[in-house]
Length: 320
Ligand code: TXA
Ligand code: MG
Image (cartoon, rainbow, N blue to C red; front, side, top):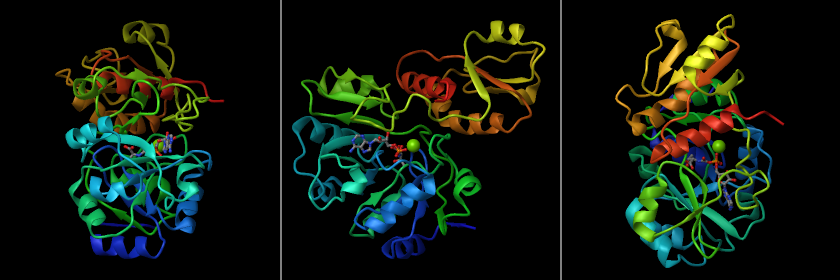
């Protein structure tokens, strides 16, 4: 069973010898490997049960190190890096030859980001290779936002989990690319569209398709609990399914007709940041209850609300 601790030297030693370590970031926990060791990267796909056509993000502690892993950093990317790194933004850039093809699933682009978590930044500073790290969950399931989430699902398969406490942002990084006329957002995430547009002007948003070659991992059904998730008007759903066992995720409101332990409020004050930080832990908690359905309502479609709604829709999508 994985040891859980805060020992950076131990994490470093394991990564240097090609073993996997779960690492905290501000978004979600990652399952990290030395990105330059083919066997270690292969093990990441194996442990997650992840198809190898789905590429991995590489993590580093500074844009200066990242310069060595890419051919060039376009002006708009440099501007975003200056504003949002360390932080929940991933950029697709032309990859340097030394980044293994397995990491990028054969693509000429590599996804790079500087995560914002003190433990992981310290770890990254202490090593001279980047970390390839997808979210530390079995493929298709909800991303982990605590060390315990990682331990429950992957603890038997990895030696160490670096415990950095609950993730502050709680949803994955925003992914942006620059090879079209306008920058394209391929995954809505921790940096909002509005924040990005304030820096570099209008962007296109193409988040949803499984046929999108730019983000093969953005499958329609993802982040999926095992209970059936239904989105809609909560008052109506609660009435319509009154003879069934269900739980409710609401943005701000309490529903007196529903048992206390079967409802989760994402943010009573209507704070989208708080709602994002609570979303995945809430889905996990409700998924374990003896119920048949999870009902949820969509949040306001702005700021982090867009990324939250994206995750709720994927959680509710029919599985192939
Ligand atoms: O917040 C995050 O980004 C977290 C933390 C651990 O950093 N990581 C994460 O990784 O969410 P993952 O593997 O669960 O999602 C990465 C997404 C996938 O949908 C993948 O298809 C896309 O990034 N991606 C990675 N490399 C890519 C590439 N070269 N071209 C296009 N899409 C890429
Ligand atoms: Mg993931």
